[in-house]
Image 1 (cartoon, rainbow, N blue to C red):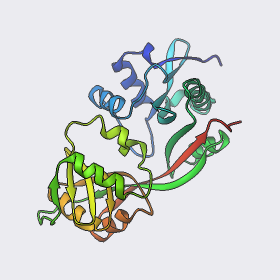
Image 2: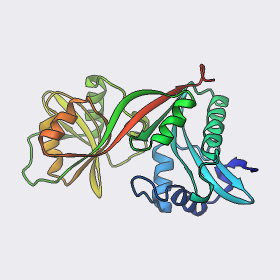
Image 3: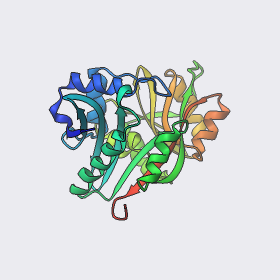
Image 4: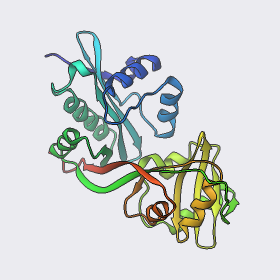
Length: 263
């Protein structure tokens, strides 16, 4: 089998959307993008289209690997192979190519998340040298019209407070680098905690820190259904979400590769 790897720039946005959706066909959790969603992800998550890779076989794109870059850190923003080309080593080929692209750009660590049901991908990442960092969860908290007592404050003030209070690194999708790309951020504070969020269809809780997370969450759900992406399982906010009746809808493993020690 002859597979050529090309920069993702060789495809139009529409072509990359089509390939992304084909690569995630029959995925554990249904997931589809349109052009607006892909463009939004590319901007918010610093996906480098030039460094990202497309696998081509017989002139047909059969797989993709997205690479996000921020300084000396990188993130795998999705790897997929179309159904007819799976189990032929293309996913591993794409991953190794992304590692090479990252290393060439001075990256030291590459991060990713893998859904816990995807054991085949998890075994591949272990083979490539990734180590498990922590378990993370996607939470959904239903809306409730009874408002909490947290105060709304400028997003910049809440974010500054979060940076002082937090004890752990936020995942790539909610990291400080991601927040820099949003112009619709809002902030909440209590006497002991703070949160940064945006309302885009649902209430996207981006960062939360400090004591009293339950009161922050009570206030947030007054704005609509709250979604929290990849919250560490041992985060204090996870217990507050559980107490308020939220559901952990997706469980993932966060992993990291040290490029300086990879095999």
